Image (tube, rainbow, N blue to C red; front, side):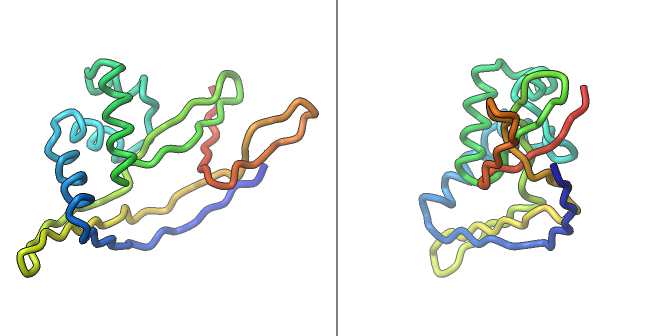
Length: 144
């Protein structure tokens, strides 16, 4: 297993598609979604941790997490636990969202988080003891 440290630069994503902009604004307008986004700003949390910390029922938490991930406001990664089952954890992906009107069109600009991130390149151990990497996923190691 290797660990990679990378410094993220602040990126801006402009959402000009009306349906996508409405989806982002709809998620931000939802009180449960805002609570989840606030909780995941400083540290990634599992759905169970979010449900407990935010006092939101589990079924609602899973639904809201999926909605936030679909519109790109939340990212998921696998938390690799050395002493128990792996878990999916969620982290807020943005620092700010700005809304403007350009020629009658709604424009949403999302500013990505500006921080150093630690990621672990890894995956699941197979039956033969080899570690398989899922290239499209992020991983974090947690010692329980």
